[in-house]
Image (cartoon, rainbow over all chains, first blue to last red; front, top):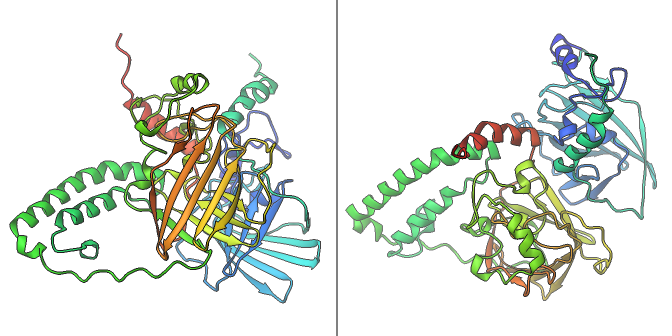
Length: 193
Length: 297
C-alpha cells in the first residue's frame, strides 16, 4: 500500500479477517452502501439482463443495480464519484464480456476485511461464459494512489440459476440498528475498568 | 427556454409561471446540494420573478410578439414506454391525493395515522418520525410522488422501472404470470403488467409491507394494499398517469390519485442518488435538529 492507503487502512476496524474485532467501523454497519466492487464478493446472487445498448446488473444484496453501457461510449474522464461507478462493456470473441469501470467515491472498502481505495480506482472485469451454466470471473483493481501494483483477485466461478429470481433485500437502517443494539453490542466485550 | 414555452401572444403570465415552476424543481442535484440550493434559489427566484413581471409591465408590446408554436409531438410508439420520464410541473412532488380526496380511514388506519408525525401537509411539524429520515426505504407507491425522474426499460418478460431517488427499481412482470397470493411483504411489492390496446400499460401490484407511508404528508396502508396504475402514452412525449390504491383494511373506499402528466426526457440519464444513513445523520445533526424549536422550560 502507499502511505496514503496505509493511513486509511490503519483507521479501518473491520469485523472480519486477521484484524477482525467487535465494535468496528465498517460503513455497512449503518447501511451505508456496500459499493462496487465489494458487492461482487457476497454470497447472494446477481442477475444480468441484456438490452440493445447496455447490460443491466442487479444484485440481490442491497437491491442494487448498475448499467454497463455497451453502446460504444468511452468512460467519462470527469465522472462524479459514486458508490457504484460508471461502467462500459464490450465483447471479446463470442463468450467474454469485458467490463471497465471508474468514477468511484473513496468511502467504500474493498471487502469485509477492510482495504481502502481511492477515487482513482479503475476496475476491469472479465465474465467468460465457458459453457451454458458457467462463468469464469476475473477482476483486477488498478489504483496507483492506494496500491503500488494492481490487485488481481483469485478467479471465481459463477453458476447459472435458471429458476431463481432476485429477492428484495435492502439494507434497512432501523432494522440494522435494532440488530446492533440487541445482538452486536451485547456481544462486544466490555473494556476492562 | 422562456420563449419556447410561450403558447400564444397573451400568455405572458402563463410563461412566467412555467419559468418559476421549472426553476423550483432543480431535480438534477443530489440531496445535500439540493437542500443548500433551495435556500439560495428561493431568494434568486423571487428576484427573478419580480424582474420579469416588471419587464412585462414596462414592455407590453414585446410580450405580444408572435412565437413559433412547437410542432405537434410524434405519435406514441406501439406498446413501448422505454425512456426516462419526469412529471410535468409539480405533479410529482404532491401527495398521492389531496387531503379532501382521501376517503375515511378505518379505526386501524386512524390509529396508525395518529402516530405519524410528517414533515409536510396539515400535520407537519419539525422533529417528525417519517421513516425516510433515517433512510428506511421510501417504498411503493410513495416513490412515485417525487420530483425526481424514473426510467422504463423493456426487457423480454418484464418492464423494469428504475427510480432515480434511492437508486431503486422494480420489475413489472409481463410474462403472463398472476400476482402471487402469498407474496412475502416487501418495500416495493410484486408487480405484473399488461397492455390495453397499443398505448396503455396497466400495472397491478400487491405484497407490500405496512411500514411505509403513502406520501410525505403521512397516511398509512396495510399489507392488504393493492395498487392499480395506468400509464397511458398519449403521444411520443407524454404519459397520462393514474393510480388507485385499494386497501379495505385501512380505507373505506379506494384512494384515486389525480391525473398526472409525465414527459419524456430523451437526453437525460438517471443519476445515482442513494439515501446514505451517515450523510443523512450528519444533515440531521447539522441542520434539521438545530432548526427544531426547543420546548419552553
